[in-house]
Amino acid sequence: MRGHAVILAATLAWSISIKSAEAKLDILVDKATQRMLVIQDGYIRFMWPVSTGRDATQTPSGVFSPQRLERNWSSTAYYDSPMPFSIFFHNGYAIHGSYAIDRLGGPASHGCVRLHPHHAAILFDLVQLEGPNRTTIEVTDQGRPMEPPLPRREMAAGPGMNQPPMNLNQPPAVNMSQPPPMNAPPPGRVRYPLT
Image (cartoon, rainbow, N blue to C red):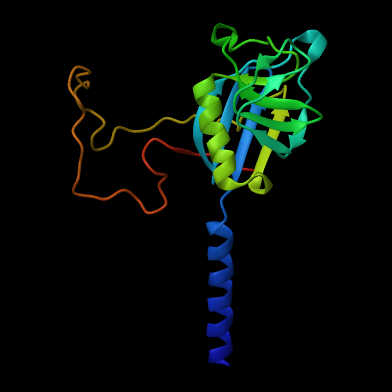
């Protein structure tokens, strides 16, 4: 009986490790804020300004998968406009680089999602690395709902609460005697729970 429990536990641990080893790439485009979040394996990797479609030529909302990738592409519908690092996701709509970088952060396109060419190259490589079948593109005009705020409460001063203000002209002292917790995200990354 104990042998069956060990085999079951080992099988469960193996299946969990296989699932966690699968890479996942989520691209969230918020038309309301004209921002893109790139989330890899549950961690926010990048947040970039974008330009989505103007009023008459809105970018379609929904959840999509990449349909095809084109490193060098030009729009035949719009005066052979260059569309470097194109990730096509719905009926000819694409995420792609744009040289009109002064327009990023506001609606300016004919429906595509425009990025700085450098950001488009990074995103293109990430989609190729992770694979289109493990990439999700979500375009919304409502953003992600914010988590409810925590209840406010008074806190008594405890150890370290009455410290002098930090001098911003000097780098903070780092305590190397204790390693970071095991479940902490890597430095510079934020854990983003996916629904």
